[in-house]
Image (tube, rainbow, N blue to C red; front, side, top):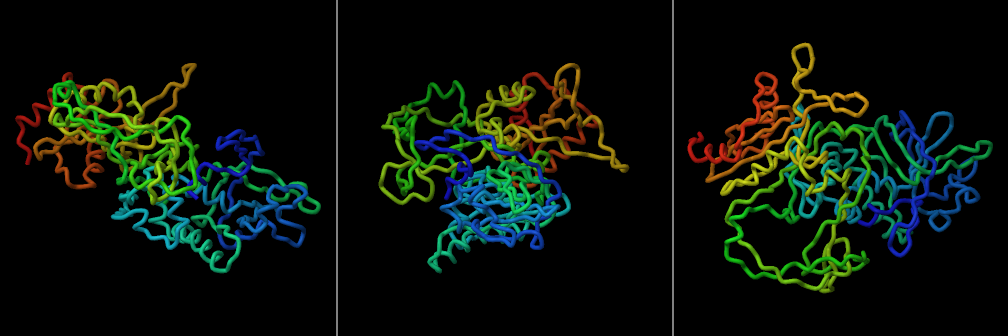
Length: 483
C-alpha cells in the first residue's frame, strides 16, 4: 500500500505513468466540525433515506467498489461531504511509503515509527528519533501521532480494520477517521452529486488538498536512521591520497519500473522523492528540522569506482528476495527547495564557501528545515507588553516597490575538533550577522538555547561578518581552551 502516496482518485494512469489529472470542482469548506456527532463511516454503496450516498447514475465510477468505506461529514444546510477512507489515509499519512506501509501491517507499534520522544509543554518543542527507514518527510505526521491520542487511535484503526475484514472473509477495504477532533477548514477537489430535490447535496472528494487544523507542537526537531548520509564534500587535499578500489553501487535505469514483488536483500535501499503540495498551512510557521552533516574532515580516502549494470525494477516494502529489485522508499517533498542538495540561500552562500575550506574540523548543519533545507525563522522575542522587536523582521520585495515583512532566517552550524565543540550562528542581515558560541556538544536541547541567545544578541548588538571566517575558526580551535 506504499504506492498510495502517488495514487489519487480521479487520476488517469497509462503504462505506469500519470497520463491525466483532470480539473475537477474545487471547493473550500470552512468551519467543518470533525467529531463523532457529525462524522460517520459508511460503505460507498450505502442507501440513505433520501437515496444512495453515491448514486450510480451520477457517479458510476465506484461501481466495482461499493463495499469500500467513506467517511461522511455533515455540513450546514443539509449538505454533506463524502471522503473515501483511502483518500483520507493518503492525505493525513501519505508523506512517505514507509509510514503508510507500517499503518497497513497490524499491530501498529510506536517503536516501528519513532522513539525517544521528548516534549516540552511550556515551549511546545518536540524532539524525537524516527525509526529505521522512516523518512524525514513523515516527521510532522509522526509528531502528531506522538502527541495526540486521537491521531494514534486513527492510525491504529487502519490496520485493525483490514485484519477484521480478513478474518471475517470480507472484502479488504480500510476504514479510517480524522486524526483529530475540532473545527477545521478543508480544501478539496471532487464532484457535487444530487439527492432527491437537491442537485448539489453531496460533495464526493477525489483529492483533499488542505486542512487548517493545528498540529500539537510549535517546533519539531528530529533525527533519522537507515538512510545513507549525503556525500560529504572534501577538498583538494583528498586528491593526493591513495585511491582505494571499490565497487560502486549499481545505478538505477532511467526507465526503472515499480513492481509488486519482494525487493532484493542485497541491493542498497534508496529514497525516491516526489512533489507534494503543502497540505497543512499550520506547518508554514512551525519549523520542522534535523541535523545535516555536509563537511568532512580531511581523513577520507579517494575511491576508484567500478561500475555495475543498472537496476531496472524497484519495489516498496521490506526486502525479502534474491531478485535484482531495488528496495525504495517514496518520500514527499513540500517544495523543490526541501531536497537534500538544495543550494543555500543567497545570504548564506559565502559562509558555506568558507566552511568548505576547513580541514580537520567536522561541521554539521543543525537547522536543516523543510522550508529551504538550511535555515529557520529567528526565535521570536517579545517585551513585557508582548511587542516583538522590529529588528527581528526583514522586508522582502515582491515587485513594484511593494515589500512584505517576515521574520529573518537563522542558520546554526555545529563545529567539532579534537573533542571540543562550538556553534556558528548566522542571521540574515546586511551586513551579515555572525557569532561563535562555545557549546558542550552533547545536549540535544543546546541548539534551542543557542538560537534564543543569538536572537537576543542580534537585537542588542548586531555584529557584521568577519573576513576570513575559516581562518578564525581554525584559530579558535588551535588557541582557545574550552571549559
